[in-house]
Image 1 (spheres, one colour):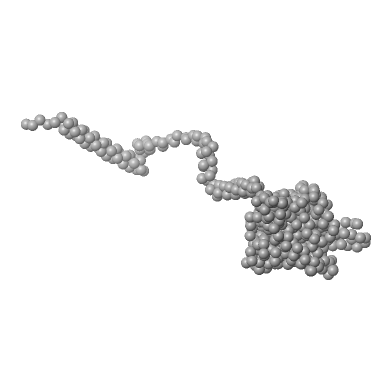
Image 2 (image 1 turned 30 degrees about the vertical axis):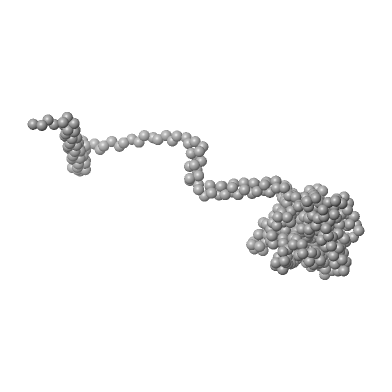
Length: 445
């Protein structure tokens, strides 16, 4: 008889033990199942006394689970998973705000300087067609001159010419121009065009260079009067339209051939808050704003094919500072007498401090970017606090809501009372403009 290997015997014995264990476990489970069935049957039998019935199995007691305190990361992750909508809103708000702040800081750090000739002379020319008495004209001219431009300001009288020369800046020059005389205007433009196209010799041995008319900037000289439509006689309307519409149109007509030949840009600086809202007692400014918008749109379609870039600046509220205070400004200052009166009015209404305007530096940067970098090409640029928001309100919000926001009923009642109280004596009507509260009040001369 052959001998059986030892490992085969070991495996056989292991199989036999496994089979025996499985058989005994199956018998135990069978008997346990039979016993459970008998107990359930006796427990559910109604005629057996309770003392004989088997007791029900004990209810397992749950061990209380003590919640461990979560860390900051786990708590944040749990809150984010439970509030997905709020998380998305917060992330969008924070991300947008951070991007706006980053872009504004980067924009402020950009070096803005006009181009120069190889010999270091200035070559870029800008014409500021605004009132020489306006502090906005002074502010823009000084900023453009500091950035390397040659600035010309059209003047019509000797006093205006002396006012421009009083700045004592060699590159801020007056341009004598009588708009009322067509022949004089054409002669001035011809001389100016000849000067632009003539090679310049700054030094004896230096090579000559040519000038380039980069841009013509126009903005209204004075703020139109604030009065009811029935209180403005036809002669006043004629003066208003001549000063704020006919004069800019004549200036553009005179410079347009030179702008086309030089491929220059044409920039309009217009206040946008009043034309957007068209409040009561501001018919003159609303009419001027609407007429300028239509004129700019038509002019843009006509000259853009000739290489002239027409850009409109919609101006909001600016903080001009105490050095630029004037009651008849395109950009009213918070230090002007009108703003001081409005500030007292707001304090009576419970408003502690009026809304502060945007810095003029934003307007300077935007103007340079439009002149040199072509920003807003053949479009509209909103600069100043409230410029874009009031434009959207005027376009999309119903007139009833806009009138209710401005308090049309209270304003008209105040105007009627002031009109009745100003019958005796000489009065002068002034405009109070702080961005939100506009009304008229009399000031005795």
